[in-house]
Length: 187
Image (tube, rainbow, N blue to C red; front, side, top):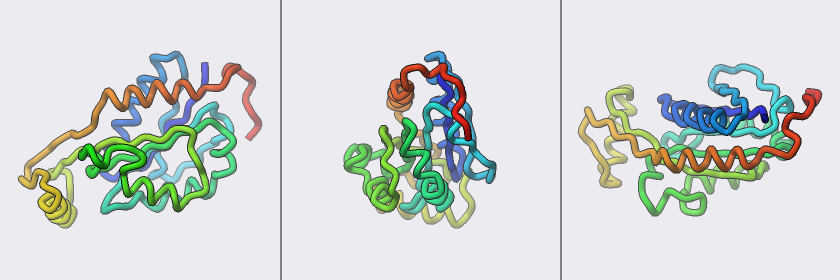
């Protein structure tokens, strides 16, 4: 049984929902997940985990600054442990943008950090106009209009392929090193 950290940053909560599903998969596989937000500023003891997963949403083409800062501050530990990263965005709803090598925002993000995760994923997010503030709603409607997406101000569309999320969760479990019931590493 391994201890798996599932760490996330989210703007509107959908990345957390994806992380909760990953925690379900990890639990079903017999491991112990710990879900933790980067957005609350808490301290995360990375060396106490066997595997690390970081999930981050994109808004206006960028991941949140706290994601990059966390990765930069912990790159040595992240590189030493089996670790995964996934990105969530509406642009990934398009078949030409839903892979690691075809998602421009993820590619740019990975070029800007030193860490090289062993597993990388891209998931389409949720469009939820009623949840957005006035300016975000207007900007996202404009972007969706330009990219031929839904623009009705009451539209809610979950583009996430939940089977893809489950498959990623199983791949995370495959990262568990042999002897995962080892004695805790010192922090």
